[in-house]
Each structure stands twice: as structure tokens, then as C-alpha cells.
Length: 248
Length: 67
Ligand SMILES: Cc1ncc(C[n+]2csc(CCOP(=O)(O)OP(=O)(O)O)c2C)c(N)n1
Ligand code: SF4
Ligand code: SF4
Ligand code: SF4
Image: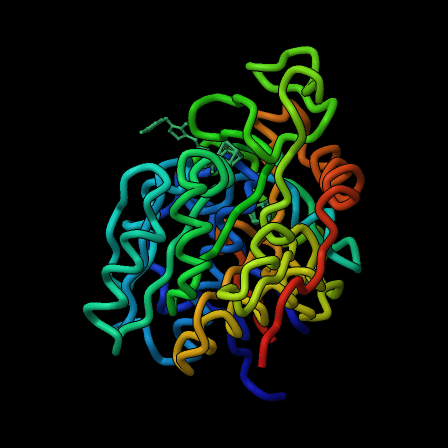
């Protein structure tokens, strides 16, 4: 019998710090995938990440690469400056849907239009997590939030924004994919997408973004099982998974 | 035989691994772990096939799979 050995390990792209995320929150899986990709591309020491304002505000303490914590929504602007002044480094911006699609929408659109050679990881959980569950630009019609307690009503609050589809209309956006991480097969696919988004940057291809649908059981007011049901049901129906742009 | 170890200081008892395991090898402990959650654990010996699916979905990198 051969000696037993560990076939999984904590990737070197993560620090040893335990995260503050709620049980079951998707942020943790996406962190691990980014860390695994940095390790596999051998760029942990050659990467700068930008942490957002939102639940991932402490991401600068969870990633082992260099990190900056940016003002709300300004990740792409900071990443632009970093990448232009240090083109030899990999630069990624990690953002939630409130951060990226609300206060930071201008930065998102214009960095894509300019085709900045950066990687954006966009966590779409259809809500403002950190501040206690207010409506986000991505909140679905009928979905309850503290600022639309009866459910989002298109007549009052308008319609949710499909960011990947929107950016796909811009010539500068070179790679856009929407993924999920609630089941192993989706996790594997998301990792491939994140790897591609980093590789594109290394190859100088321009703006890449991976959108990841995640659960927020805490602010959705659902247990984890029902949260996954919400993600697989109404969320994926409105935000279909898939590749929205992949320019060679 | 493959097996898993759950780091009780990291596990938040979310049960994602339990829902995911194709062999239903994982159950939740009935005692509080070091972080105040009911951590996951291997329910029975000779069950785990080392597929790593539990590791893949764990948001807290709390699981190590041995083979
Ligand atoms: C300039 C500014 N405006 C508003 C806020 C309050 N604020 C903090 S986090 C947040 C939204 C976070 O939601 P999201 O980006 O979806 O991330 P999540 O917490 O869901 O991961 C808001 C509005 C702030 N910190 N700074
Ligand atoms: S509030 Fe939601 S997004 Fe924030 S850590 Fe908790 S589950 Fe995750
Ligand atoms: S490695 Fe596979 S079989 Fe073993 S506990 Fe994890 S999910 Fe179950
Ligand atoms: S998925 Fe991870 S954090 Fe959740 S119960 Fe299993 S070991 Fe614990």
C-alpha cells in the first residue's frame, strides 16, 4: 500500500487568514479560484489586486499578492492607473454588483470602452450585501430588498441591468463570461474563465471580465438550499450563464 | 481508502460539502467547533472516493482530501 498524501491544498495565492464572510457565501470560493489561478500562472508575486467597497472590502488581507483597497466603484480606474504604470504586473479588480454596476458603472463602462488591459472579477449576488440588503441595479423584478420590501417593481424601480450583455456591445471588451460556483462543475468552469481572463491580460489582449453569480443567504433571507434554488431558478433565467464575448 | 479532514477553525458549518458529496459521506457534527459552528465531518469510514467535490465547493478552504 502506498503512503497516504493530501490531494488538495490551500493555494499560495491566499493568506492564512480566515474570512469574515457568512457561511456558504460565494465570495470565498471565488477568492480561492483567483488564488489557484495566480499560483498556476506563477504570478502571486507579480500581481496587484484592487479590493472593493462591499463585503469583499477586506479582500486585501485574504490574497497573498499585493493589494490596494479602493473607494467605492473606482476599482477599474485604480486598476487602469496601476496597469499603465506597471504593465509588467498582472492587475485585477474584484467588485460586487453594487460597487461595479451602481456607483462604479462609469468606471466599468469606460475602462471596457478603452479596452484597458485589466481583469475584472464581478460578483453578482443581486443585492447590496455589506450594507444590509438594499436593492442593487441587478436585483430581480419581484425580489425583496430593504429598499423595495414588497419586491422590485419595474414601474417604480426600473429593470435590472445585465452587465455582461451591456459590455458586450463595446468594441473594447475582449472577453466576457458569466459563471457560477454553487456546484463542482460550475466551479471548474469558473476557474477556467478566471484563468483565461488573466492569461488574456498577460497576452495583452485588453479588457476581460468574469461575472460570477453567487448566493447571499443572509440578505436574501433564505437558507443555503433555497438560496441555491433562487440562483438556479430566477437568477440564471434572467442572467444566463455563458460566454458573451471572446475575441481572438 | 481516501478520506477528508475538516479544519474546525475554518469550517462555518454551511453544509455545502454535505449537499455536494456524491456518496453522502459527510455529516454535521453535533458539537460546536472552535469557531462556534457545527463543523462538517466524515460520517463513516470506507465511504469517501477522493473525488474532491467537497473541497471544490467549500467557501472556506476547510477541507483537505487525502488519498
Ligand atoms: C461612496 C460610498 N457610498 C456608499 C457606500 C456604502 N456602501 C458600502 S458597500 C455598498 C454596496 C455593496 O454591495 P455590493 O457591491 O453588491 O457588494 P456585496 O457587499 O454584495 O459583496 C454600499 C452602497 C460607501 N461605502 N461609500
Ligand atoms: S452578506 Fe451576503 S455577500 Fe456579504 S458575506 Fe454575507 S452572504 Fe456574502
Ligand atoms: S472527496 Fe468526494 S467522496 Fe470524499 S467526502 Fe469529499 S465529496 Fe465526498
Ligand atoms: S463546505 Fe466547508 S465551511 Fe461549509 S460545512 Fe463543509 S467544510 Fe464547513
